[in-house]
Every structure is written in structure tokens, then in C-alpha cells.
Length: 182
Length: 182
DNA sequence: TCAAATGTTGGCCGATCGGTCAGCTAAGGT
DNA sequence: ACCTTAGCTGACCGATCGGCCAACATTTGA
Image (tube, rainbow over all chains, first blue to last red):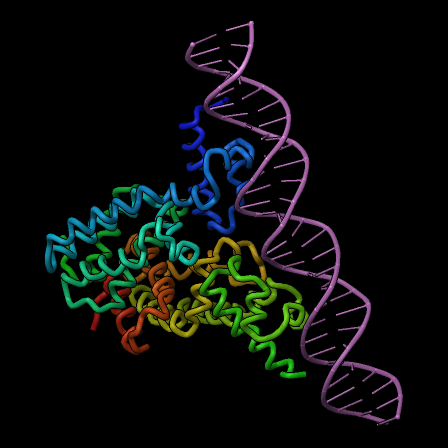
């Protein structure tokens, strides 16, 4: 018992989220995760029932956060809703960089999994909120939604400090939607 | 000899580009492509030396197009270069929807393949062109570059006519970059 | 002190992957 | 009629995948 069960699970999830984000879910083997986490492949499957369970658990915190954002947006209308949606999405994307990347790049492998966040539904409702602030057509909103998640793809390459990145993402989003920036 | 060699190769590439775009390179097996193209797996490997060769060939037309765009941009400066870069990228992304999606989502599987377009280098030079028109910081340009490619991900879901999509993508890009729109 | 519980591992399994090969069919030239 | 060639295929191969299990190590509590 080198590490406690809690520590071991955390280490495995830490390795998995980095590797899934870098090489994709299908491009990462259990052996890859085990090597990175410093244990055997069999040990992974003692702490997690299977590979999918690892993915499900590391994405678990994201679902409720999106749901909470949707709840907040439901009470707003028009431009106010759109600005809140931008702020919320920028915040979530920065706080869950790797998870958002996984959600986007492996969306095909994740679709139709009831235990995971309903990406399509979430996207649809957020699109409604973003469109509320202007007559921004479908394509413009879609474009910005996609942009937000994918820019974090280049996590390692973007050397900007987090606050600068947050400000630029917010400004770019508002501009794309046709809303005034400070 | 059901189909001529030329027809067969074209059919295989047509199946492959759709399946790679939908399920990823790693998520598509040779058997999947063969079934879709209506032939045996062995027949694929008669027409193409291996799975990589299929990928290389269906991406082949994209590289020269990007290179040509870079060439045109090299003769321009400042805002003029940025506007030309936007127009060129929108055009390429619309004309090579599926290929662009593959390039983005499977970038990890494609990196360091000398026979394929140098994604990193292309991105870097286009980023320079886009930045030329304004003081647009790194993050804003990156964000829009990513957006452009990924929006085409939702090819099937976006029901907008191509001309509307082209206009909206162009307008959104110019706005994000802080350039005036018509 | 010694089980019982917890954590860990090497070795193994069936499935699937990309890729090979001998051999089949059909068309074309002579 | 015959042979060559191009096109195509079922069967098979080695490698790798996710997952399972018996056995072993370590800690814990009575």
C-alpha cells in the first residue's frame, strides 16, 4: 500500500485527464495511464471498474457546473443573458481546460452516454441564451461556442497569463456576438 | 472488375473522408471503410499501401491550397493582409469541410508526419497575417482560427445555406479581430 | 499474534486491429 | 483457344487492446 486509495484514485485521474486531452480517449491505453501514474494496469482496474469509468469520473465535475450555469441563465433575458452566458462559459472553459478539450475532441466517443453531461442539450440551451442578446444567427453563436472550447486546446502553446486570456476571450466573444465591449 | 481502378480509389476516399470526419482516424477501422465503400478490406489494401496512405491522399489537396494562400498573403501587409487571410481561410474551410475537421480533431495523430501539411507552420504564418491588421493579441487570433475550423464540425447540424454561412463566418472573424465590417 | 481486509501485480484471455498472401475471377491481346 | 494482367477476396498472422483472476504484500484490529 504505497498510496492511500484516495490518493491513488486522484493520481490516476490526474494522469488520465492529461493523457486523454493530449492523445484522445481512444489514443490513450490503460497501460499508458498506468505508466504515467506509476502503477500497474491491473491496479487501475482495481480502483475503477473499467476505462469508461475513469472517463466518466474525470468529467463528472463538469456536468453540474454547466447545469448551474444554465439555471442562472434561465432567470435572465436578452442581452443580459448573453453577457452572463459569455462570462460563465469563459469561466468554465478556463477552470476545466482539459475536460473541455476532451469533451470536444472525443464528442463522438461520448455521445449517447446517459451518465455523461448531455453535450447536445447543453449546447442547445446555451446557444439560446447567447442568441438572446442580439439577432446573432445560428452560425455566429455556434462558431463562438466552438472557439471557446478549442482555444484551450493550445493550452501549452498559449503563454498568456490566465487573466489576459480571460479578458481576451470575453472581449472576442462579445465582439463576435455584436455586443458592446468596455 | 466491378469498378475501374480510378472509380474504386475515389469511392474509397469518399467513404474514408466521411468516416474519419465522423468518428476520427483512430475510431475508423479499415473494415468500416470497406463496408461503406462496398468492398473487402483486402481490396482497400490493394489500392492503397496502408491506412496512413488513405489519410495522406485525402488530405493531399489541402496542403497546396494553404501554401497558395500563404503565398498571396506574403505580398500584403497590415489590415489588407488580415482581411485577405480571413477571406482565404473561410473559403478553404468551406471547400474542405471534412478535411479541415480531420486535421483539427486528429492533429495529434497527424503531427510530425513530413508528408502531410505542416499544420503548426501554417498556423503560425496565418496567425502573423491575421495579427497584422490590428494589435489583436495572440489569444484572439488563435481563438478565431480554432473557431473557423471547428464550426464546420457541425456540418450536418448547421442547416444554413453556404452563402449565409460564408457571410456570417467572415463577419464574425472580422469583428473578433476588431476590423470594421461592411 | 494472527486473520481479515485492503491494495498490488504478473500473467493470461478473447476481441479487434492493421496488414499479408495465395488463389480466384474476368477482361484483353494475340 | 490461350495466356497475361488487373482486380478482388477469404483466410490468416502478429500486435495490441480492455479486462479478468489467482496469488502475493501490507496494514489493521481484535
